[in-house]
Length: 70
Image (cartoon, rainbow, N blue to C red; front, side):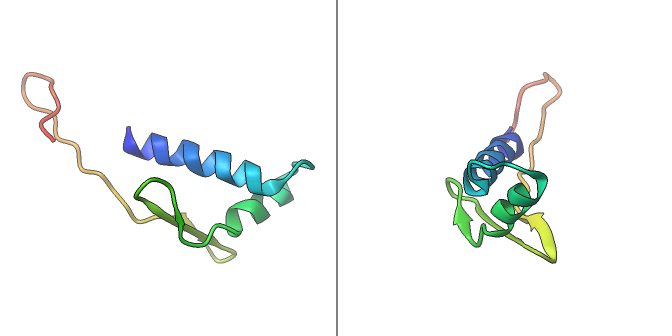
């Protein structure tokens, strides 16, 4: 769930930075202009040679009863 939240925030911010004349190229430029952007506690950085965005991973455990443990 956290990764989906972060992905949605990255998409919206990339689109916002792409400007009114949206194209593939302007969207990529918008993403690549994101340098240490705080998306609610998760820092995101994109660059021309690094599109990983973040190395954050949330470990989720589900118990035998099907409920989230963590």
